[in-house]
Image (cartoon, rainbow, N blue to C red; front, side, top):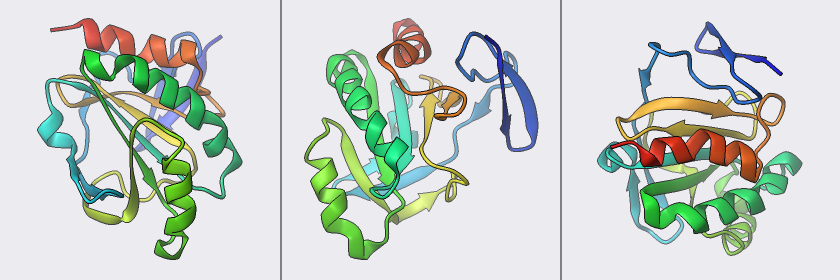
Length: 166
């Protein structure tokens, strides 16, 4: 199955069911500096040399909640192999308790979008969306439920090859 995706006005084709960025069209991931719920700073640029997942979600979004267990399992299995992850909630600050409850169920860091001192991704147009960042700091794939649902298999296809590269 081939799917299409739109990213900043560019049209690309995905192999299989994964929305990979077209070869030769590597685009540097935008800056993201955000304080997580524990007060620690996550700086995407400082993680160059490692693979990363940047997930945008919300507590009121059913597809977001549905994909969290798969993201958590995958991160737990691969965090020690050069994978970093942050889930950035677009919830309002008044909803921080609901965000904290969800964060208590996952193995990765969680932050509120309002805590970002730098967010080159902007506020996503649709939720959820997960960006796969390669070791060079480029966006390697964009995963959305309508084109690339988060599953153990889709995560493995998108991320494991990036973790094996030097």
